[in-house]
Image (cartoon, rainbow, N blue to C red; front, side):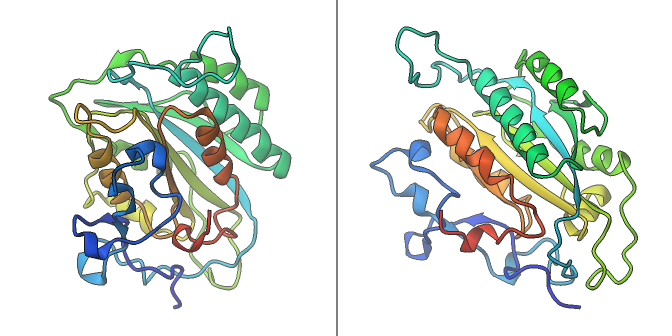
Length: 290
């Protein structure tokens, strides 16, 4: 079987300045500021650092099959939210990070359905100690629009606890039955399952049990795709933004998209728009010139 990917590892970060690469779009200037070189310290590792063998995943035909998109939101309150997004309209109240996040998701759903009316969405949330479904898979845009304003960052994460993301994968796999893996390189599947994780915390590191059977099944399936969007405070000595971004980068596959933004409204909307592309037809992020 041929490989689905042209890279053979997870996103990884290097502390060695001699091994830096300019993967545009993976790290942004608003994350690290103008005077630091940390934003350039991105590299893809060799096979020796692999935890999952992506080379064995078959190539799926580049057909825009129906998508089942699960948007999973980290719904904990970020205690680091000490300032709001810069406001472009004078004398108007500044929007909260939660409101901007929900608006970006609304635009994503609306525009995706305009591209393909067959797309189905489900909304879920994850917090320390639990995963919760807020909707079933549906193409009813109005029900999704009515639901999103109710998702607020209400509970502050406990600083001493880990944030386990592992339950996402078993729950997502239980919401639908994956297509049979027969002649997958020739016949496109009926649909693809895409999990979009929106992580909001600037302090608590996410954890995933990489030996979990559901995680391995999801991340190695040609019918599943994991994308990540990290919303955070601007990096400082008082938060763990860069460490968290490294952790998120280690759980994705080479065909995943992973974006981040601090309190920049246009950057949030632009990065969410980059997720509109169909996962079977988009190029890998490492070769995309942003």
